[in-house]
Image (cartoon, helix red, strand yellow):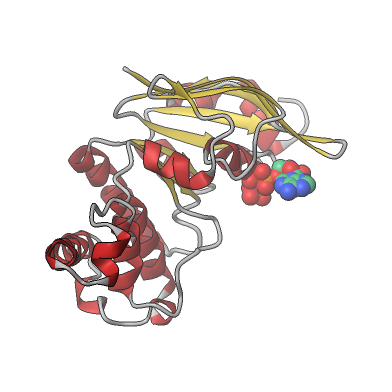
Length: 254
Ligand SMILES: Nc1ncnc2c1ncn2[C@@H]1O[C@H](COP(=O)(O)OP(=O)(O)OP(=O)(O)O)[C@@H](O)[C@H]1O
């Protein structure tokens, strides 16, 4: 079933058309890649899907409802979570608190109950801590739960960002270059983890990635952006053979 559909989406900054006719569709449970040369508009596309930017033109529908005009936190509660190209954690907080904060967006206790520290607050806090530790375990971070986030090695910070995104209970997870800065072994482990969480959490995933072995290895379909436009879409095999894509990456004629 269709989860996300964009139609005629564009974003203009001053005179620059960063994205134009960004038309994509993602079905429930699909793992999709978004690739393209530097500056092609990939991160701008993520910012449009998550309400950081509003589109200049076009429609963005998610689970049958429009996302246009919504703020990022409203889009998170509709079920879209993301990670960032430059990791964004609460660097001074512990690993556990980074995940708990994301779970808190779903907490049911009221402000009064939390200020007065009433029963429901404690019960839910315990539950949130338990669930956060379970998530950290999946990402092999449970023994680092009480460390300050900024002290984690780079690869672990990237995993923590994904864990935190999952704590918001998304239907669609957007990963912006999750393998950036990872060594080949970490990248391999990440690939397996992405496959596993998609299945385990019943998610759809849209992935921006420069590491072609990762994209081609795990994505079912791939969209290719060049100068803000989708120039190709298809299976990894189709994309690798597509002359437009080869030209965009290698430059010149093929
Ligand atoms: N806030 C902004 N104001 C003006 N121009 C912007 C803004 N954000 C992005 N751009 C421009 O839009 C174009 C697309 O940038 P974007 O960061 O989306 O590309 P990208 O495909 O994510 O690149 P990379 O792979 O290098 O991260 C670039 O020319 C960039 O300079």
